Figure 1: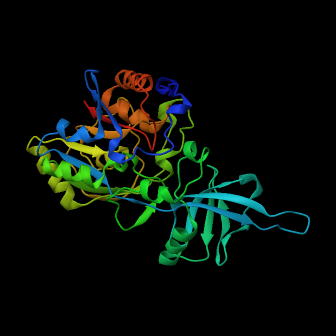
Figure 2 (figure 1 turned 90 degrees about the vertical axis):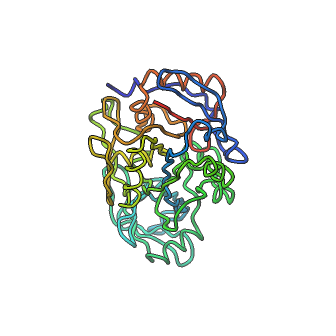
Figure 3 (figure 1 turned 180 degrees about the vertical axis):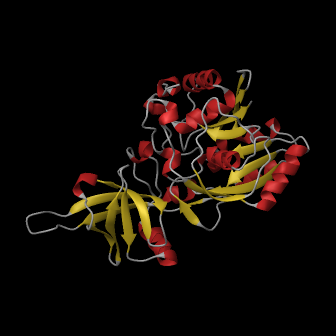
Length: 351
């Protein structure tokens, strides 16, 4: 297998720059394992599930991880350089890995000034192009500074066309996000779930559980190798608690379906699953990369958005449903004008 099998042409006009209003008004493409397709709405989700089925959400919170700063002139003959920084992975309470532009104008030892009393020094560079930043504060003080001076880290396909604004603080955060802000991208399938929809899910006696995966570079960085087996994903921190694992195992043993909401929730579950699908509690890093031919062990259905061509996330849905089925589903979605990517419409995948 190579990346070209997972390519498709997407008209730029179908890339959603804002979510539906309200967010549960998004469309839902229901994809069946035999290839049947149904056009529906996210509000229709409860009727495709049964009492006792379990929706599993990623309750990570997005950090305002996009920063603008200035690298001061190094000497009288040079000029200040405006710098765009996106944090991608926390190293310790004071240090982060980040993507910085223009990378060619930055070197180890430089300081980037984000605001009065808020700066970071470049302490290293990585082979993947990331820089190591050491901030002048840490812990709660750093989170407060990021909240005050940062913006939501919108994906590049949105950020290229409009800046993040105050509205994104609300729409690019799930309604069930926990207190710990550590993700640098939203678990976007969860953005469709308004309080109204969650109430309707509860009324239908569909259970809800949460796991946590802090979304980092592994989720959204493009794959670089043409041949699939040569690619690896960056590690991301995930947690499945003993209590949640026990309830999910009990539900599945009773014949109910486990339905992750989003690829990050699915990757969390699959990284904690035995060969027979039994889930074990786990806390720590995972770099699980699901691709066609891999065994899906703990996922019976999936709620997800539409993904980029040749991405690890499109390969994940092909692993669950089959590449031919998903290519046909995406052709249908493009033909019918579904909205794509983080702020776009959703799929319900029923193998």
